[in-house]
Length: 292
Image 1 (cartoon, rainbow, N blue to C red):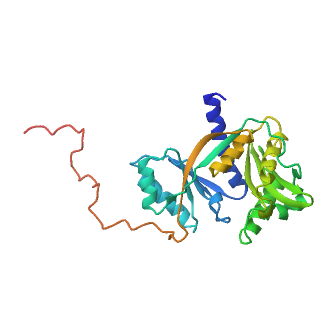
Image 2 (cartoon, helix red, strand yellow; image 1 turned 90 degrees about the vertical axis):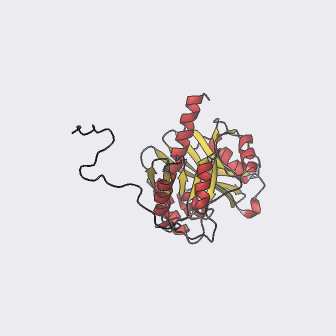
Image 3 (cartoon, one colour; image 1 turned 90 degrees about the horizontal axis):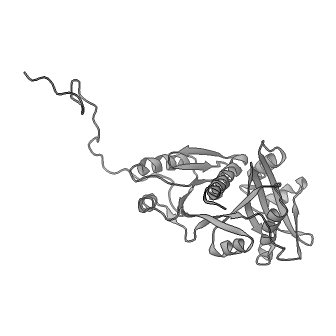
């Protein structure tokens, strides 16, 4: 894929991820330098993140104050995604507010459009039926978030907006559902999200077969590009083997579990850094008063 086309496909994949959160009941606030993706009723980092953070050194203090106030007022713990390599000033700024980098990078990958043959012939994959919505929701959320997630999933699945489509997938071993994923298409790009496997079936190709099915069967329709995220080197290698290619990587910064959701004190008060001009005061660029 040529440079311009690759850049456009990458941006489309990031936009599709934002739309996925929005269609499940979230919203996004755009600030100069980043987008604050937010879901107040599903308070997990996967639905509350600052996407594509790129703020200059002279503007980061205002940005962080605004962004953190946005999340902390809602008692949410966001994740900040900073494209690699991370600028020094952003690393220092995030650490000052208590955020710490995750060890592994988050990588966005795009598919060439051809899925692999099944890894495990014992696993059969198919789109989920509407009557299986409780089974689908059980793969991803705890008891606390599940009712909200189930309702949002049902609305987006049954009543999609124009230009979008949501297709949950289930992988079965015999009669038992052992893996799942959600394919969400926005315009001409589809993301494969929330790939999950039951604990007893991990390491047997159940997740890989769901991902491969999504691409090879053109689950979201013909002529659609597919994207997926990897949060470990092992997963990235597996996805490359499935025909995906890494296109952009991020360092994710998160708060420790015991961190307070509050901005640090600004420090002792100092003199004002700007004073309004006094009446009759001369400003830069004004002509000098006439000599007397």
